[in-house]
Length: 202
Image 1 (cartoon, one colour):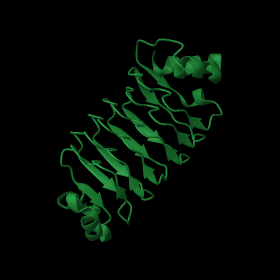
Image 2 (cartoon, helix red, strand yellow):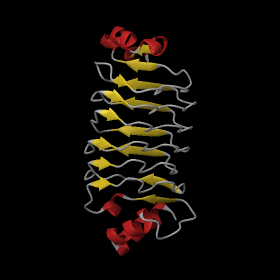
Image 3 (cartoon, rainbow, N blue to C red):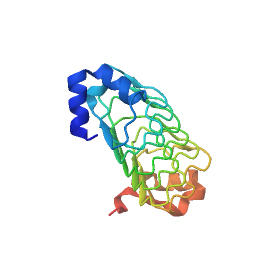
Image 4 (cartoon, rainbow, N blue to C red):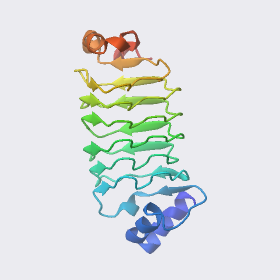
């Protein structure tokens, strides 16, 4: 089902019915589909595993009413690009785990923690730009992304690192604020050779 048809369905039948059919699996969509913003109605959260394993879901428009997204909400889905709006304050673990079509994730939100296994094995993920609000990067949160071109961490203070979070990430450069390079190299000593000033990114 195309994005246009999805949108028409939502408008014609109402957001609540649309949500029941898409999110709760009452209809088996065998072709590509997307989830428009209006499908969420007045909801303020996306529950855990809501879109888990929906490989045919290519797009989701998360509205600015959403403040939290539960664990594994999009794991194994077919998302290609996603934007996390500024309203979001918390993310659950394994959020995008195994999203093998995901190429970009834009953080408009000021979350403080990147949860465990958040982007684990997103094999097409090209880059990550983490907001300055991040204070912790969870275990294996970025692990096994072999085509990563770079990661930007905008926090002036190095976030705490969970186990294995940068393992198997194509040895890509990690760009950090210029004035914090030395601090990062000390705090993240095992990653020191990959840390560069943000101003050097071309």
